[in-house]
Amino acid sequence: MTAVSPTLADLDPLCRLADAAARRLCRALRLPAQEREDIRQDLICDLLHRLRRFDPARGDLRAFAAVVFRHRAARLAEQIRRERAGRAGVSLDDPLPGGDGLTVGDALLEEEGYGAWCGQGVDRIGALERRLDLERAASAIDPADHPLCAVLAADTPHAAAKRGLVPRAVLYRRIREMRLRLLAAGIPALA
Amino acid sequence: MMDMDTCIPDTPNGAAPLSEAALCAWLGAAAPGERLAYHRGFLARETSPLTQLLPDAERLALLRLAHRAWALAEAGLAHLVQRRHGEEDYSYLIVVRRRPRHIVPNLLSQMLAEAA
Image (cartoon, rainbow over all chains, first blue to last red; front, side):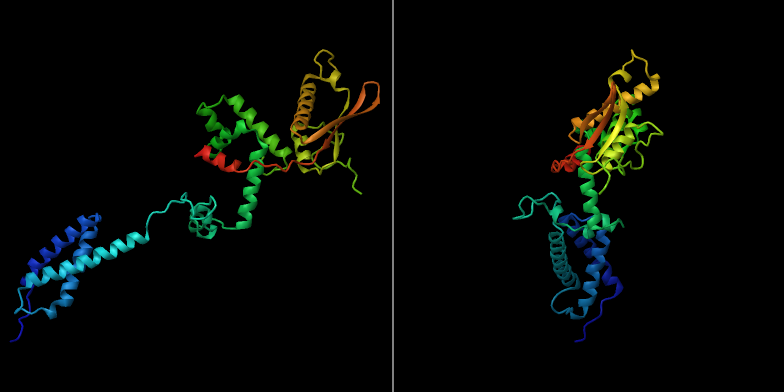
């Protein structure tokens, strides 16, 4: 007996089956709604690929499609779970095992960091020198002025004075004091 | 051998009085042991508002300079000494000390944490 090829009319209810299977999978894996259409197409492609093995003597097409969709959905779910496990969230502040207090962030190279991805310089010697300079500068200025430095890192003196954190005259006096201390510490570039 | 009293740019050459910024810049660039005469005269009299030996602006500038030199010495960056030339005539010298190597560890990290 020659198997009769399914027609487009036969495929229409199967598409609804695929849609239902895709919706179930999205719900089970908490996938965004826009993924559903991709999964549905994936399921239908798999069904079309396996359609030549369909034997009407063993059951109807809906049952065959339901089994194909179920198996394909299970494989997709497993694949997505594997990908998620590979992307397990690791914080930069997580301690490295046996790292003697080092964190994951400490073990990342500049070349692999976000700065490199954004096109910033990744000169490690330069970065080290800059850090040493900043350490030296931080130790040169009065610790009481550290919060002011933090404010000035984000705002201009004018903007900082406008926010009213410190009276304008006091602000400029402290900035002048910091500049003189930096000069005396031999860091004219920062002053 | 290098002359320790050599003037470097941005420091007094007799033409212009030394400013606080110039004194700090000189100290920042100077090697330990180098010295600079930051004033010649008698500071106590010249900075007093009663004596009126100097115009107010000059007197205040000199007072600020003397206070700055004192603050630098207090911070452990320099020694202050005087050389007597005669009656009420002294050279006030600032001598660079060896820089402290001590840097507070993780100070920058603390600042960054405060800023965040």
